[in-house]
Structure formats: C-alpha cells, structure tokens
Length: 99
Image 1 (cartoon, rainbow, N blue to C red):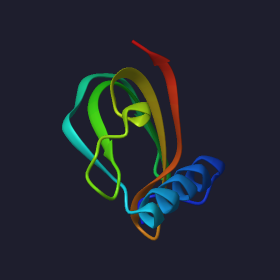
Image 2: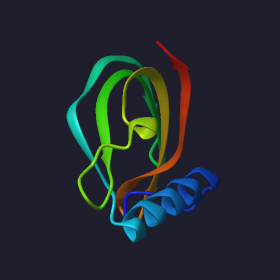
Image 3: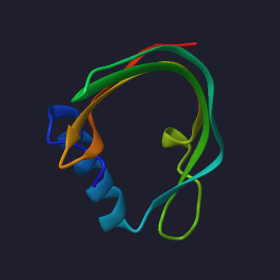
Image 4: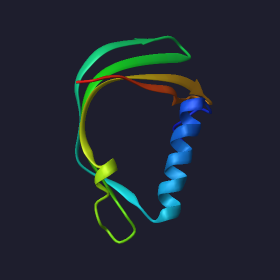
C-alpha cells in the first residue's frame, strides 16, 4: 500500500472499493508530470507540487465508457509523503487548482 492512513486516503480507498465492487475500472491514455513546481524534504517527510496532465477513462463492467467520470485533467497537485518502515508513502494529496 502506498498510502499512510489519512482522510484523503480513506476517501480514495472508499472510491476504489466502490469501483472494484461494481466491476468498473480506469484506464489512462496518457498521464504525465508537466512540471515540478516545488520539492522539499526532511528525513521523514517530503512534499512535491507538480503540474500534471491525465487523460483517463472510467469503464463499467461491460467496458462502456462512463462519461461523467472520464475526462482530461490539467491540474496543479500537492503530494505529501511520510517515511514508514523505510518506505515513502503518500500521507496527503490535494488538487490545488485546475489549469
């Protein structure tokens, strides 16, 4: 698991469980970091802000596209990490703004 228990983690986990249980799945035509806006770290924590691009499609159990959740997203995101048992894990994630 790449997430440390947090509110954001719980939200993501709940969404992923719902998607899996319904037989749906995401696929990405393209996902890339366009720019690293900032990065800082200590021995136990790190934070990176990036501008990113995602072209994602949610498909239902029959493979049909779910339009409401399929889109192209350009956003600035903030990821915070914590080191746990020697491994970096995401502790918080926030979409700062859509570009």
